[in-house]
Image (cartoon, rainbow, N blue to C red; front, side, top):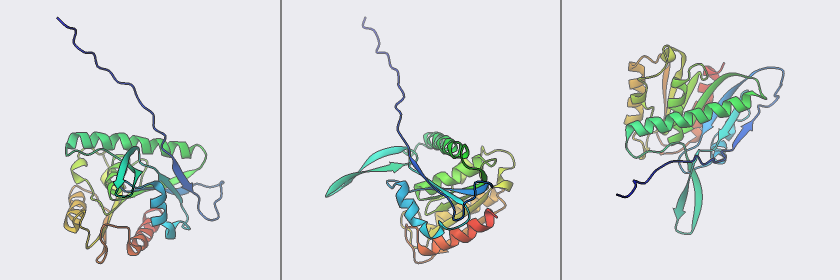
Amino acid sequence: MEDQPKRGSVPFEVDCPYTLVLPKGYDAGRAWPMVIALHGMGHTHDIMRRYVAPLLDRPWMWVFPRGVYPFEMRQPDKIRIGYAWYLYTGDQDALRESMRLSTQHLLDVQDVIRKDFAISDSAVIGFSQGGYLAGYVAPHNPERFKAAGCIGGRLKHEFMDDIPEGAAEKVALAQFHGGKDENVAPQLAREGLEKCAEAGFTDTKYFSDPEAGHEVSEKMVTDLGHWLERVLQ
């Protein structure tokens, strides 16, 4: 009788860079708010930085991490490497676990920065896939984040069933969405926020750009800036 094959695994380490942008007039003698901004699927951290460029002069630190999963983005004339924040096949349990692992990575990034820079309040925002993850990160870590902003994604209210006690009262949630978004229907995005409010979240805001599609529009960035000013004051 032949021996059965033996299976195992060996971890493979992938370098995941980030960009830290300090506020104008930065003073190391005080703590500053921090905003972690997550890019969309197939994008990079530099793209997200360009999206929110009009807000980089605000009085808080910006952190732009790169996604943890590299993959090929094939186009007719070239192949480039894009990045994702989690793996999704339709299996909800696997998705939840993938989000949990990526969340731990973001907490590690925050810890690395905290070693050299004093941080006061923190918020996490993201576009598209990054928005989905942002809406998972903050409610599950209310001791770390005051707010989560989802741009062009959807707040995954189905995954709010295991958040820490009191998180719904501590974490502010906002949805920024294009009225012509064909990737994530506006009604689904609004419903996600409403379901979070029904689950007990006391600070929920919906911001719409009626003329925008699946994008980070100028109006969304303006609304995002006003919202961050309020939640990080």
